[in-house]
Length: 291
Image (cartoon, rainbow, N blue to C red):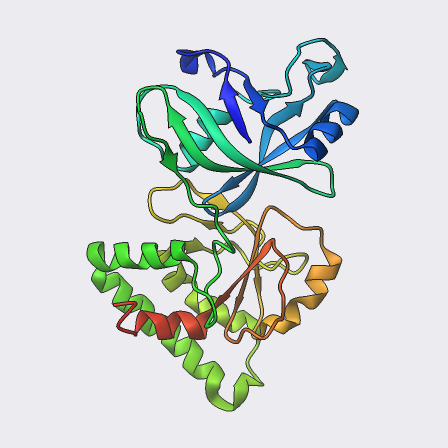
């Protein structure tokens, strides 16, 4: 399916509505029945909440109120946003091309909590003949021995070229933490000791906030890689990822959460949780692939 811009040359006024086309019957039926729902956008880092609303053809928004109205198209409206969904996609995916977005091919998932997860697949600009193809990420912030997300690999390769000395220092700091925890399994070392790697992680693009005693350990953390905007997500600190089970059951899923550990042994982490395994990160940074 895709979303189509309703008119051209409207970006300066905040952007137009975007109409849905070729909507699967399950999505269409839900939207017609509910009238409207929140839109969550898939970004290069994972899903992020937005101010936009998907609105059915038989309803419209009057301020914050959903009322009956014969618009005739299922669409995405700005709601409380200051721009359009097209401009949000342009910003998140760092599309620097000038001109209006005419169409975006998308996947839409209906989340059990009652919102749409919109994943852009390709963007058609009015002044280009070929679409700009976007990657739909799978565990985009994960770095473990079994799986290293392409975003991490691209970030490390870029830093190798632009700031090799800083990368060298970061490797030494992460190796020191990993080495200490490897001695006798680190049984007497507290999980907070992993925060010694915070300076190294910030060089790599992961910025840890203050460690607190309730909820997620570092709730106001954020990630910024390549030229993409900053992405805010909480970080949980565990020596072993298996110890995260309580948080999975206790806390509501957020747009995305990072689990920082030295040993990854959690089986089947949920879709909204990415694991960063310091042991695997240190090994990759010292390998021929990571150099």
